[in-house]
Image (cartoon, rainbow, N blue to C red):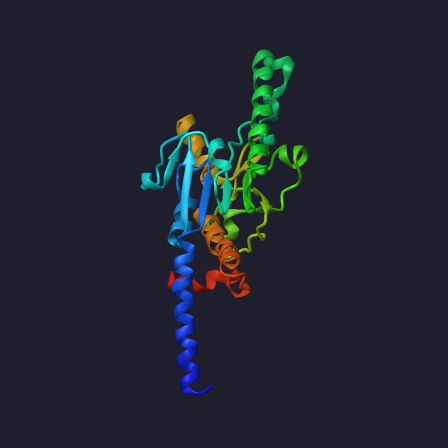
Length: 255
């Protein structure tokens, strides 16, 4: 390649970078049921117009990026990507014992109704009018009530030394690739023979509300992987379908 060709190639790359930044700022991302803004902030780092939404106020330090209120009216607005973390209290299988009618009677009846409403909420996100949707939840009843998840990930596969089996239901998005597999701490063992992830056990000392908040947070490594790997898919679609931007995370140093 001669010097003139090298210059033209460099100029074209510079123009592409400017166009990438310009396009990224027009791509809208909704992170539903998130007050921590961990995922929202990860996409903001890449230049996307990302917003968190939750009935609780934001705790991520950027209230200007937060929509406080019911997420359902937001779902069918003009979003390029929706990432949702619907409450899992009534969807996880770990709470099945509370549905025992003989033992818990009216409380079990109420919990069954809460589960019906939680399933309905989950499915409203599934059916949102957006071409790219990711829904996160722990292992639970949606694997049978809806369908099996596209993949199950753990924080320790993305650089955070913790166990938290996390299901992902994906629409129009690729599965996440592991970025940094580390060894999680040894699980806490009980006299009964059961075990529990250490970070999950440590949260027991917190108040019920704080414990729920901590346990529902997305680990930073997974949030970063979502932003790095799915941003390329968003840009490829907007950037005249150029497939070279599907691996956009390799360009993270210029964003």
